[in-house]
Length: 191
Image (tube, one colour):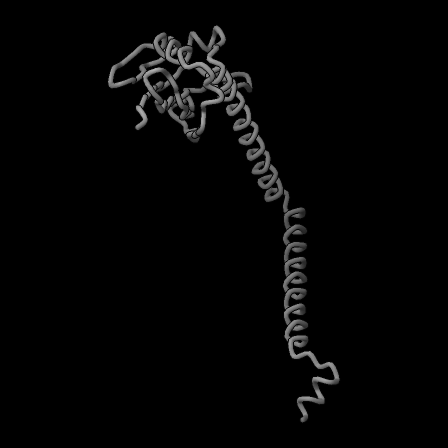
């Protein structure tokens, strides 16, 4: 009977819980603002800490810029690979490539160019691209990209995997591909 009266008066048992939760959230935000404000004030007062902080962000920006530059460079190769047409400098680098493995045989870079040219419409057939992170080796950097694409011919359908590892060098704030560390083309027959 008492319960009925309380319900009839519009008492909401969850309302009290909700207001407590809201109070906790507001309190946490308030504490974070005070601590954050104090830390900012300390950093602005302490020149050495502030300089270190700015240099840290600057270094982060430089790394991001390098990542974009290297990515663009590799993208150029990707576009050439998709179209099956390489620039003169790209062809030179490919011809100087260390080796290409195809069906267990070692082939020269010239053979790789023929391999790519043979596969028409490579662009539409690429179904997976995998990137390898850049890592330092001596004074140079090595990174790579892997392409998976389908080749259809009179003899059937094949899965091709092309793996390229680039050796990069930075000169005058620009990245250059100075050699291809590894160049492998693997063919697997479907079915």
